[in-house]
Length: 424
Image 1 (cartoon, one colour):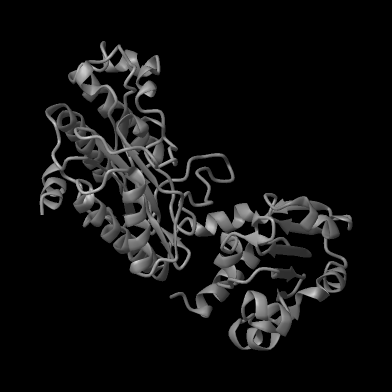
Image 2 (tube, helix red, strand yellow; image 1 turned 60 degrees about the vertical axis):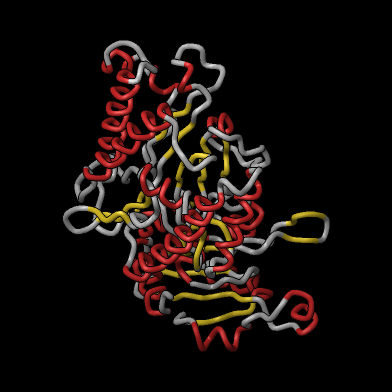
């Protein structure tokens, strides 16, 4: 768990980034309607949570930076017995004052009156440009000298993870490991994608994760060639592969793991050839990771290695330089080598700095590495044995002081490891 002292330090660091005579406002996420009068399970805005650790809706954090001092105010839902009867207990302002190291706690119904006073003589307004304009309208009525995006400032802070954050990410990955290993062991016993999906989601809950970190993908055969396939309702066909992209969220921190396994527990010759080429590429890219490296360098090398591999297997014809120049490899490898990961599975953190220069890898950053090849069953330009195969292998990598650590290295990945689990 993350201590209140760490959240306080984050707020203090953010305050240092603000201009003098400014007001920063960050709202909680609204409840989202699922159907008529029912809501989806509530999930707090990641930036708001990053600064507060507070999980309730109808709340707001305001930071006021004057010429000589800074103040933080947390607005929370007031205690209401009738509301709590239907929707659950709320912390309320009295208990919030005991927990949060802010200058003051105010009930949310007083926000409009309070913000009017707090914004007096302020030149700059920081708020999340991604939020609904209606939330900021009451603030925008006042004429500020400039409006600035607070999300970009918080995103920069979220790039480097603390020890406590890394611990939570590891926990999420450990739970995801159990779910993937169970899926690998059950693949031959089930007949449909949704049965494997149910097993994965069951194990997330069983081991303490309240949710998946994103909509899981369980894609058999040609379905794996739809990158964001989430139907998860097709039969499992003997002789085909199943691409499973699934990771849980634990205490708001994500995991993101992809494994590709055979329906019958054993890889065919063609599947082995393509799989080994992709996993070899992944090993080589992961070994490149260390402080100072650019993510685009990882991308370029991955494209070279995968293109060379596809030439060897007869999927592409020509020299790798010409093929890459013509972007022909993109037909089979259309996505990036990876992304930041943390409070969001695709963490809301920048890839470029304020000068539009690419941000280099630093100790404490966490990113995914996920090479893949996707070949449609209708692609007559490739050898028949590869048609209808989609393979992606994805791990979560921590940048260390001098190198890297694969946080998901305990999740079965090699052909031997996967087949051993399948036949237990």
